Image 1 (cartoon, protein in one colour):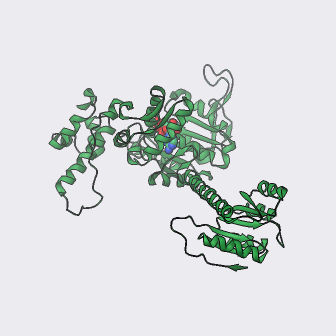
Image 2 (image 1 turned 30 degrees about the vertical axis):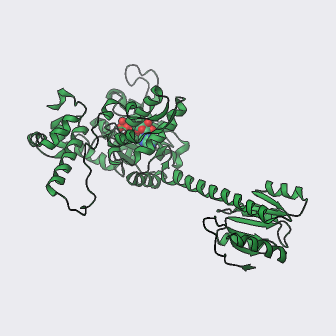
Image 3 (image 1 turned 90 degrees about the horizontal axis):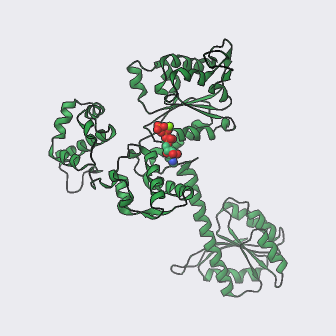
Length: 486
Ligand SMILES: Nc1ncnc2c1ncn2[C@@H]1O[C@H](COP(=O)(O)OP(=O)(O)OP(=O)(O)O)[C@@H](O)[C@H]1O
Ligand SMILES: [Mg+2]
């Protein structure tokens, strides 16, 4: 086995790392010289076993192998090379007229074959197309890695740093039985996260049972959660199991947990502490092994401070908190989410949306998305229904997004620019930006916005009189008049 370094590569011609496997020294030498003349980097060997060892130790783009080798034959070599994680593109050299051998080589996974003797041109053309295939394969596997590992988790997509952290946390916690508390504004993807945790856990074959604690009337919720015995209340004509029992071996997703009434908070605390409960109207104690995932868009710590939510229950639930940032804090996700929803609604609505124009994208990235990802999905669905095909343009967007004055919120300089910066102006712009955000988040209710900013309502009103802010506010899509003065 000998190795040779490549000659100077000709300008711009793609250079391949080639492993040449040929036991005839003269033939090997001729092919090697021809390939090196083309600028390729050639490693040569006469044995199939050595070729395998070489390919395991370093990356080759192409393996050019004879069929008749002293140890393993070329067809077997193709099969074994194909098992390698970074499999090179295989080209087999067969004796003249050996069509059967060539067919076998292709069946074994070779990309192409060369019938000996072959001309320099044929060798050159075959290597060039093998190299094209190799670069496509590499590109494809990079793309798959990106889509699988980095930018998506289950049905969730994201390219922002903050959400990558959330993905990592979900990945770590999924396969444990820990209680998870998912916190985030409405529409940020809390339910999707609960589904992702369940489907990535060993409980995935069990049920994922959702319970919307805010949507079920309090009188019914206890029976929904824990079941009831026959005759427990008017209308309970038969006994019925509750969702904790249905979720046995699986996961129970307690959505809007902040809405749970005080008596039910006590009962839930007991399930979390002792894993036991009784059905409504029953005396027998049942065990529950359901994993609990809870979610809320309320600030539970504020509810605890206001004595509306039990502190002990909060700590029982808050074992692994997952904080889902609002969409406006991860603007980098917007293009990927748009593409995700375009693919989804192109399929579902037989539409052919092809992309988003630059102007529309600017508007979409500047909009504060109070309804988060759900709002974005709804907008794409509406466009898929109404527009059906082509690029999404500003005129396809809802009025509230279209009428956003461009750069209404000045972005902060990442650092002091070379020419210096007007500090008081930068501070004022930053303050304006936060005030606007607070107003948007609170649907323009000044008292709520002031609370969010931890300032007095009168201070906020004073600040709103400032020319720089008043102008921006005036340009905004009409805030609800009746609410502005609240
Ligand atoms: N990262 C994401 N990738 C793809 N789709 C997402 C993502 N985040 C959210 N979605 C989609 O956005 C919509 C809203 O998500 P979801 O219902 O999980 O939000 P939520 O936080 O539970 O909202 P709410 O508090 O109103 O119940 C769903 O259609 C969901 O599939
Ligand atoms: Mg939800």
